[in-house]
Length: 263
Image (cartoon, rainbow, N blue to C red; front, side, top):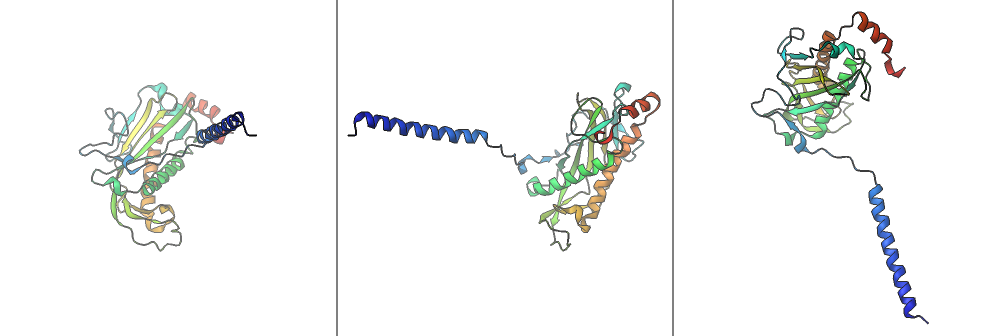
């Protein structure tokens, strides 16, 4: 006969099963891999109206016109000889930041297009500096960190249909224009964050350059954009070379510690 005690035991078992099930659900939720954050359009950086610089660099007060880069380029080099570029033996290249022109509507510039431009310029920077410094992933003694931003990308017209065989990616709805872009960059100590050198390059290299696809680097019609980004990266290298001169004991020390590709 089913007694009250039997009913109580049955009820307790059912309650325990429910609690155990809920505990498993909670545990599963805690152990799931976190989803990567998606950067919204509101997170796009924009040059403030009336501002000469983007604000990407924390300090603009010590820049001076550069005779070596020419044009409207501005540079800064740490005056402390113990913190000069030629004492460093490796470099980290950070992801490139992108700032939208004051006149552009950031909400109309797709994340995918901005990301494609930033990724290509990061690649160009790595290519430009890698034979001067081994490119590494982790901070350490005598390791530089290269921070760079493309400033002033603008919004162009609607993108015409792509007929190029390499155009496997969906074209952007509106083109990204690089005509008035400038570059702000700095080299900092990877451990202390202290600025070692910096440059602001206002060279107008992007005349006619626009990006209309996520994979623009493979599409002939966007060669002007690739060339402009490559040239900006080349000027970063030019600046680095102008300050990175090894002589005497410094050259001998660099030869001893230089280990390309970790060998």
